[in-house]
Amino acid sequence: MTTPAAALRLSALDNRVFRSVLLVLAGVPIAAVYLWQALIQPLAFGAYLGDFQESYMRAARRLAVNSDPYDLCRTMGCLEPTGPQYVMPPPLAWLLQPLISVDSHAITVGAVLVLNASLFFFIFCALRALKVNDWQLATLLVLVAISFEPVIGNIDEGQVNLLLLALSGVWLWGWVGDRWWGGLGMGAAVAMKMIQAPVGLLIL
Image (cartoon, rainbow, N blue to C red; front, side):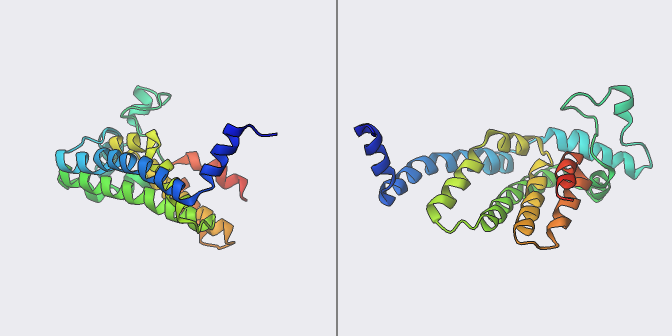
């Protein structure tokens, strides 16, 4: 037997208008904070993107002069989760070589836009893969994604994880639909960061 309070909560959440009001009340501040921290602030006032500049671009510069991008792993070790040590597979540093001579502000703007686009592309792929047709549920999932604190942290540091997330979305969409191109997303993700490799092994 349900309590009156539980019954009241259930009936309120069953009301689509009430759910819409909740989404607006929660969504406006969440969206405002995300836009400020993930787009407006880094684009208007600049951002350093520590991991991108100190690790990824440093490795790209060393590759460009035929040097070892993993030199810091020999001298400092690669056991720390963060730092200037480059621990990714070579393709990421190789692909970034054309950006070596580009202005750092332009690189920051491009990286921030790409990372934001990657997040929303993942959301799009996930919604298609999960066949989410209800706008309220889709809005809720978007709010959950953009309010997840590590998302902002990844943008602040310029980490490649959000790009991997987008590629994972391609894999998920292709896997659900039994499409061959899903494997391309997984393969590209593994080529950039080995953390995706266990998932690739599970789907073999």
